[in-house]
Structure formats: structure tokens, C-alpha cells
Length: 456
View (cartoon, rainbow, N blue to C red):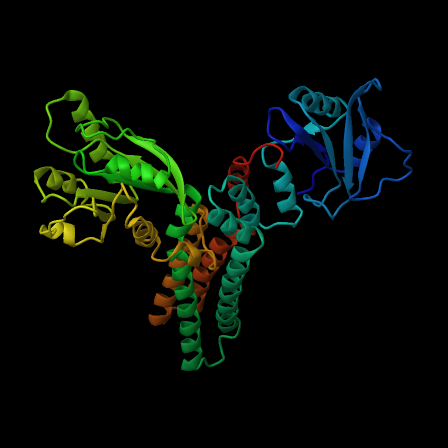
């Protein structure tokens, strides 16, 4: 796809700031620079990737702002086209005036993600690398940022291209059997096909297993704190946040609604949800809070079931327990600095249990590590070293590729004709190609790049 028009958009977000940047990309980018930019010193030819100080003027030669301008000649630019960036003072009016002037001069306002789309269409990025740009911008933790940067630098692409090459090799062997039907096919050839396909399936299964970790890094982890009143749920929330967010008193039923706060733990973004104390109550407001707590438990990624270590398990603990049977649960026995009775109920001993004190911080490091491990099966520091698939679109494509390879293996075991086997391998190739963009439909491309902000 070739773009003949030249696009323009603000690179910096709206609002006031020290500097605002306007980006222009396309064949006429340098022409717009010459039309509206007056360098402080006379310039015969603009050198690529060099900043020039001067004045931006409108169509009537009236000064708009003192700016810095840089020309980045194709293909050494973000879009692989000629790109100009104007660095002006960061006022909304100034940026809007500069953009309006460029549009009046013949440029077109860029659509969301159109600069990155052009980078993809011009071959600078494949589709998975382009998607990593928005993940990097939206990353909510340092670990999520590193995973997105690894994808932008081609970690996912290299692995996916490896899968694609292996499927292509299998297809070449099968098609050789189709092209030369009179040749005898030794059993060792079938064994080779089965061995290669099985190894590839195992590798894809491992990649799919990384999706949960990737999803958590990208979307965040929902952690529900539940338990009966006065066991220390709000104190636990405050300690994990490092601030007094929830009111803590000795009066039961202080928290009557859910309280949600964001925090980063071992590189993973978390959404902590403190809930109303679960107990039998006739108070309609408190009862609604209890109902909301039980409803939240059904959708939580992780549940911290808090019990009072200084008391024996009672009916309200069992009531809170009933809301936790369908999720990942860590039993948090609070008040570890006080006398503790053994936990006798079988439910509370069938899940990981950690003793903490929300008042002194005792056991909190163990709790944090257990929270990460209970979801990912690894520590946060280990996750950054692997290739992690975090995009649902990538997962769907991998699942379809894996399914086609499974059908191929089943066909081999049933001695199906090579023509039918090749169909499964072509389906696998098409699915895997959607990740990097070789076989992605235009409507999917439109949906992907519409998620981007204008100017990227």
C-alpha cells in the first residue's frame, strides 16, 4: 500500500507543557518545512537528523512561534518516509495553530496510529512489533514495559518466524510427496514428519502457557481481600499500598462498599479490592456490601482470605470461605504477633497459608512473593527473561495454528493422503502469519491501529 498524502498530528498529549511536538510524514514533509519554517541562519539544504532553530510562520508570513525543527529523510525515520518534527512551546493554542496552518497548506490530519501503520506497511515493523508500541505506551509497571520493549525489539517476531519456518519445512516435505507420487516414501520419512510436528506443538504449547503471565502484565491482576469484619482486611490493604487508604477502626462493618486501588508488586500491576466484612447482618446497607464482596470473588484473579489468627474459626469465617471456592486463594492469618490457635478446618489447610501482622509488617514479604507465584508459577524477576505472549489476538492465532498441527499429526497417524495433510499445514501457516502481519485481513489491521493515540 502506497501513501501519497502527507499527514500531520501532535506527538505530545494535550495540555500545557514546556515543549510540544508536531510530526509530519510523507513525500511533502520537507516542502512544508521550507514553506512554513524560517531558520535563524540561512540554510541552502536541510541536513537530515539535525535540529535547526527558527520561526514557524503562517501562510501570511506572520510569526506563530519560535521553534526547533528537524528533518529525517526516508528511509531513516519512524515511518520510513520523509518526516519533519516541529518542537514548539507546549501551549495548546500554539500546537493547534501550527497544525491548522499545515492542514491549510495541504497536509491531512493523521488518524489514530497512522504513523505506526505506515511504519508497518513500509516494512520497518512487523505487526507484532507495531502492537508492542501501544503496549509500551500503556504499560503500568517496569516489568510490563520490559516485556513490551522486548516484543518491539523482535523477541516475539523471531519466535513466531521460527514457528512459521518449521511449518513451511513440513509443508515442503508433504508437497514433495504430492509432486512425486511414484516415489516410494519410507516409513522414516513419516517418522521425521511426526517428530518435527510434535516438537513444534510442544514449543507452541509452552508459548501459550506464557499468556496468563503476559495478560497479567498487560491488564493487571485483580486481587480481592475478603473475610469477616475486624480481621484486618483494611489494615492489610493499607500496608500493601503503603498509605492509609481505608478507614481502620475496632467497630465491625466500617467498610460497607468495595475500595479499589492500584499498586505494582514485583513488577506486576495489581488492582487491590477491599470488601465489606462478610457476616450475617440485618443492616440493608451492610448486606449490600456483603453481596458485592461475594460477587467480586467470582471474577477475581486472586483472593486473599483473611482470618483472625488470635481466634478460632467461626461461622462468619466459613461464610467468607464459601465465596472463595472457585478462585485462586491464599489464606492470610493476620495478627501473627498475637497468640494463635491452630487452623483446624480442612478448607483453610488446603490452600497456601501465610502468617502476617498488618500492624507490624511481619510476614508481608512472604505474602507478596506468594501472591506473585500463585498466579504466574514463577517470580517476577524470572518472567522478564522469557518470550511472553500477552496479546489475545496472538493467543487466538497460536491456538488455531496448534489445532491445525494437531489435525496434521492425527492425519499422519491415520495415513491420510498428502493433499489433505497439506491443507492442515496451510491453515497453520495462515494462522501464524496473522501474528506478524503476512496474512492479517485489513479489517483486523484497522481495529488494531484504531487503539493507538493520534500522533503515534
